[in-house]
Length: 126
Image 1: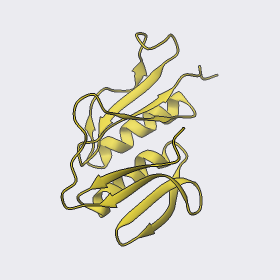
Image 2: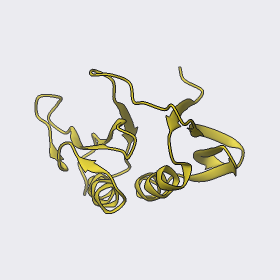
Image 3: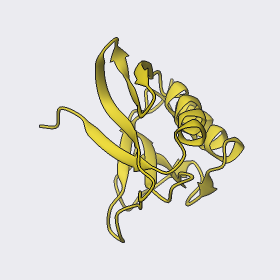
Image 4: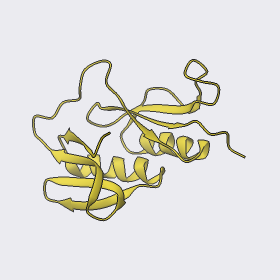
């Protein structure tokens, strides 16, 4: 359904360091960058998430969050650790969320600009 998503950030360097770490834990990388934007994905020049420098950036209000698919529970844990190590705030540690399903394993954080994000894996690790 979605081609890509853009988030406004106040400090591209801080946001870039944060997303390099948290998305790197999930297998994503920078696929482009310039003075005002950084794109993340799997293929060069094909961003799935784009950070855009905006002095007036603010996070969406209550009810909005962005969930990233994680390949494993270990990746969810690495995402959470990376977020806390790079100016993110804990919004729910890695663990099972039985209210969302028997195998729903997720972690929730808030990025340096206040965007609420999640990493989720619904597969049981071997």
